[in-house]
Structure formats: structure tokens, C-alpha cells
Image (cartoon, rainbow, N blue to C red):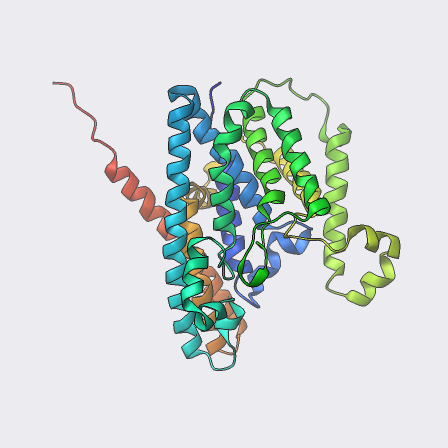
Length: 374
């Protein structure tokens, strides 16, 4: 099977990275236009699903070309790189947060970022950091990706040949979460904010979508508005958006939404990837894929900036994590002035785009020069 790159994957990964940065800056006005404000899921689901999609595309090629052993080695090598990056990123983040906290008198940024454990017990905090148990705010997605990627060799050889059995096993594992409460341990008898036992389903579904996207399909001749699956998914997306907007007015929400629906929906757990979150993301992804086929729209200048960030998602994610507390500090120093909040949000996204441009330039420099025929 040949694996071809879908440019929409890079675009939406880049957009998700911008949304994650904006969502991590408190009181940021641009955080009001991110995905989490218009549905049950947010950029985290986009990031994990597309990580699975991109991983299977990349390592599926290696598997087909070089065999399972080489693919396994390359996957685990990448997981190790992510682990090392996590350790260094956490050290840099703590330094930045301590610096920002020394300049902000009205708030305790160390407490808000969940770093008090390092101050109270630094020796245990270092051990917990190495064991992926100590994960301050902003750091949760990377350990999740490390664990999911490290488990990819177990399913990749089967997934590229038999998609649905792998999805069925993954779904069964997901369904054990509410039954047994499985999760990985974190500090102070806590658990991981992103439960890998639940979120692995989204990663596997991304990989399954990658495999299925490479198979020949019968073109759909019916208009979108006559396709029952599209209509159902679109209705769910619209209903979720309307309900999410009602959260801004609790009294109106309580008056409009019946108690039976409240009991069915809430609580919407992000840790265990609540079914309504999972279904919302899948519906949103399906509707988006139908409305925005890969017909060249990703080649315009603005879309290319997002695509470039998506191609260097690890580096851009790390930069966003480091920029968020700095933006928060600058906003706090100006009493959260709206102009400063917008400025720091746009400047942060601009710096992320510039880093992606620099990384692409460096990648071009490292390519071997073509040999000219004499």
C-alpha cells in the first residue's frame, strides 16, 4: 500500500497548535474563537487524531519499504526523542514561569501552572518528571503522545492490513475506562489529565482514517444534503455549538435544556474522553472533510503558513508552551488590557509561523546539492 500525504492534515495540525496556544493564555480574547467555544471537543482532539493519522502515514511507508523491524526501531527512536524533549521543555518552562512569577505581584503563576510540587519537594519532583508523573499545566499533551507513539508498533502491522479488528479492540479498551477506572498515576495520588487508556481510541481512529484514505473509493454522486450520514453529523455539530454557546448564560441554559438531557450529557469528561466529546469530534471531522476536500485550497499563502507549522508540529508545540506564560505575564503587567492581550496572541502566532519558516529553510539547507551532469 502506498501512503500519500494529505495537505489538509498539516493545515489543521498547524491551526490546532495556534488554538492550543491561545487557549493556554488566560483571558485571551482570541481564545473566544477557538474550537472549544463552539462544541464539546477542542484542539486537543484535533491534535491527537491527526497525530495518529500522520504517524501511520509516515511509519506505514517505512513498514512497507523497510519492514517491521526498521519501522519499530524508528518509531521507538522518535518516542525517545519526544521523551528527551519533554524533559528539557519542562525545565525551560519552569524557568520561564519562575521568571514571570517574579514580575507579577497580583497572581501566583507557580501555583496556577501546577508547579508547587517542585518547590515543596524538588527531589521527588525530578523523579516524577522522569517517570512522566509530574506534568504541570500546558505539558499534558506531550506525555500522552509519547505513550501513544510507543504503543504504535503493537498495532501498526495489523492496522495497515485489517483496520476494523484493531478499531474494535481499541474501542473495547476505551469502554473499560468507566467500568474499571483505568488510568496512569500522577503526583499526589492523582491521575493523568489525558487518560491514555481512553485517548488511545482517538489515536487509533486517526491511524485507521489514514489507512482507509489510501484505498480506492466509489465516488459519492449524491449531493451532501442528500447523504444521511452527513446530515446527521452536521446536525450534531450545530446542536453542540448551540448548547456550548448557552454555557455563557447559565440561567438561559437551565431554562432551555431539559433535566433529562443534562443528566445524559454531563459531566463531559475531557480526562476520559467522554463519548459526547468523541462523537462531536468525529462528526466535526467528517463534516469538515466533506466540505473541504483536498482540492488545492491549502496552497494559498495564509494556509501555507499553517501547513508549515503542522509539518513541524513538535517544535511549534514546544514554542507555544513556552510563549504562553510569557504572554500571560505581559498581559498581567498591563492589567489584562485588551489591546495587549490581542497583541501577545497575534505576536505568539507570528513567532510560531516564523519558527516554522526557519525550520523549513534549515531543512532545505541540509538537502544534498544535486549533482550536475558534465
